[in-house]
Image (cartoon, rainbow, N blue to C red; front, side, top):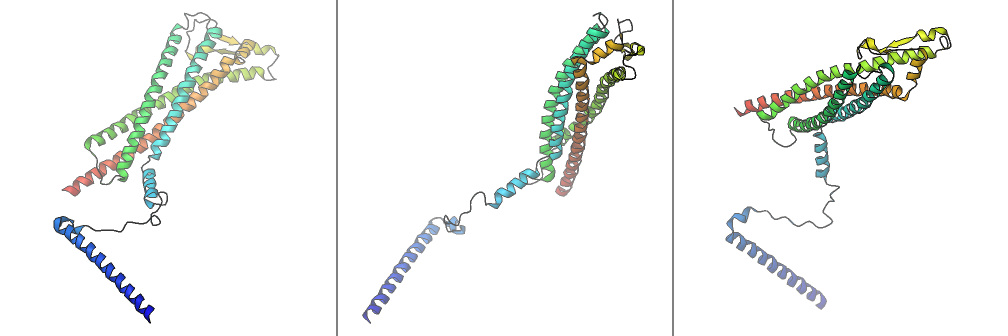
Length: 305
């Protein structure tokens, strides 16, 4: 009987201490609210324990942020930039080396007099300098278009809160659309021009294959199979010798300069074609983004008024 009474007394003592502590805490909170009236609206939340805290990798905010960032990537502009860089690099690098090999073939075999192909040498040297400028320009232009693609894609998809655009931004986007169209038309001409040396070298190579064929090899008609480089207009008609026939032509086809120049011109032509495709993708992406930006800007103005 006595132990039960002692335990009941201890429980009542603990409850009274808890009430005192709670009343003291409530008095402190009331005193704080009396001294700072603006703090009554504050909400007090219990501090979570270490077990209740979620890890950074398991947080849904990180996943949503990654999805949001991936949604702002201009994939069309990114693919076009990679394709443009690759195409321009192939065209400029292979075209530069192929032009140097072409000059060596002309000087050694088709035009032994330097005065006959002096103009051609100057033109080829000028084209090599133009190639340096094309490579530098398209490197910067590709980066600018990619940055513009990031801007317009984020604005179109409204990834950063309220939609905001300016007349200056739309004007810059329109300028890039126009400039990309002009460059696309220009590169169509470059692509067609780069096919001309491929056609010339193919004719020479096919003539050499005819000479090497069993039907004509070792016969007297081999020396009558010729290639006259003057008919293409790259050297004047008074250039000597200008025309190569038979076994001499076969020896030219077996040289390393001819083999490398022929295949490098093919790669350069393919690079020009890849650049045309990249510019077409740029044109579609920039035109679509500009149209959407212009439409949304008008819609935003209508909602304001």
